[in-house]
Length: 155
Image (tube, rainbow, N blue to C red; front, side):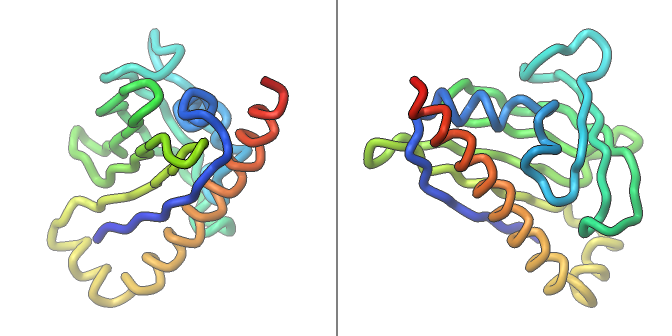
């Protein structure tokens, strides 16, 4: 109930970090989450900051809002948030950045919290959702790469 995708980007970790940690830009990158807004006093990434994301599952529906909380935030290295419902973490999404070969290796991953319902779901349809998540993560990272590498040229 987890998966990850890695993509090398010809951009610095700082450039990539600015993109992955700005949840208000998620609509430019994700095939499912088409907008997000910070909640309360939050205006940017920090541990404990909350935001809500507007999701269109598989890009076709259903459409719903999720509340998320930043759980790890190390500029230039790692950004992680949990999808939360009724005070319980359902899923964690993270971006790990590592400077390599004159650029940045970016790994996006998800980890679904195991419970009885998720175990049944993954047993029946997990293969499909896992492929959809990996396809979506790759698309997200490729879109981020296009912007990061263009930004790196301007620097």
